Image (cartoon, rainbow, N blue to C red):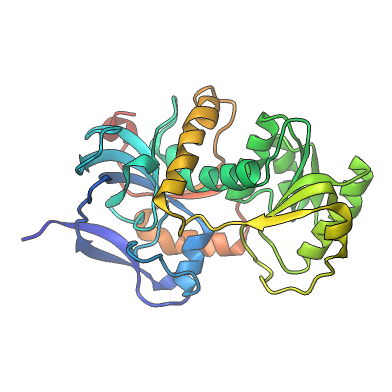
Length: 339
């Protein structure tokens, strides 16, 4: 009988309760790939969108949700030399993280930072790949510049605040309550703006006199036009999601007058060569900061794998601060995985 694994799959498009336990054949790594025995898996907004039926996996990817894991390398395929069986890694996936085992390109594996357990490590890949590529590679954020992130207490937001601050930027963040604004400040934000009671455009312009240099936006909708008003001449705007919709009508005159740049990206469907280039920069420039404890993921709550639906309910409520993680193997990770 072929070996099998436990997982959580999407029964059909719908609400969180369509996430159900299942048994699947054990995946096998192809050339250049590794098989990881999963200890923990991160939960991300794209998982929610996939479950809702609006963000299907790219061709060839597993239909099991989950874009990041931490665990131990179980096996490697032909052409893999950078990692070996027994190595502890965290890794970016194109899908398949809500399971006992997952397969990914070996180049998308990164070492677990010093002092991190597998729960913390599983919260790193998706947000750190996303923030590094969009804020620093696409947005070109430099030391001494000003940066605004919307959704400052999301997994992306808590990562963006810490990275932007660590690399010398002045950081603005928006959040939806006084407590969440305080959490942004605790992470290093210089200014936290309660978007329910304050106009972030007015606050940014009052504090800077000219606007911010880079904006990371996951809201879309009418924020796009407002963001133009909040940007400094020569500013860069990066879109990574559209919680308020991707179809908007905007006046582009401010873009011309202020010489603004608008860009964006989707990580999951990018070629593995592109993702590997991001991984290489993370290993060189960001992983030392994690090893030194300068930055670390914010973990809001950990759920057993079987309670993935409850994790999705919480994510959709937006009541969390930071990351949600699934504990795939609830035994002590230090004992089982030697972290």
